[in-house]
Length: 298
Image (cartoon, rainbow, N blue to C red):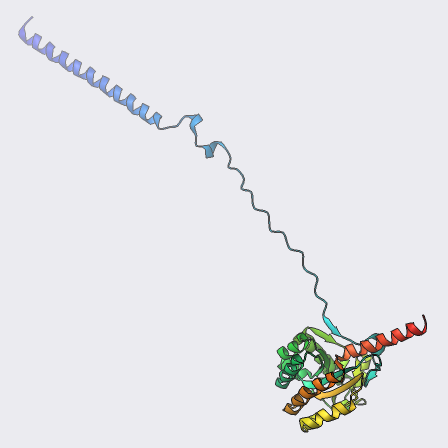
């Protein structure tokens, strides 16, 4: 075998060996790459829990129990006993107790607060006949009147003296009644006609609506603003059990009235009188009548 042939055969063998080595190396790399790719896929039994099990349902908190509503408070009602409904009253007939009722017309005004201070100082109560127009302007004062234990009554809206139609009487009295309730939370079946006039239409309408028409038995004419001593003297000289005294807390400066009341209360207390509201006065008369009837007919 010549040298050229031997050299050529050796070169071919080397080339063949290199090619075989390259093929083997390429195959190994490919298998390794494939096995790495498969390793990234998690086995079926290794899925995240949130994919294998449904999430637990969220339990919503129970709604708060609706509180049972409190029953509405019954409104305070200033009303006379049944036998006085639609009647005109000037005083009460009471013989078994010394009681008297102070009444004040034409408020509520700033003067009403001064009257209240005197009443509270002496721990007594009274009855206030209010104008609707003043109730609208001073609702807080009316509220204080009732809160202090006093009674409140209807004195029309405008304080008209002239004759009125039933429609006007209705507007004047009913609207005032609405404002009594709005300002004080109370309802009232006590009515006093302006000027004490009984024939101009107001009293007739009030009686039709079951009001008691409250007049008076003692009138010291304090609306004329006489000296306090004159007002005091007039009341003390006429005081009797069951009397209803007419005074004013509206219509202007009432300083004389305030001074008079400050004197009247302690002097009548010294004589054994107690001060009550008009509804209390009429209730006492009704109770006395019933008691006398039971004693008479056991």
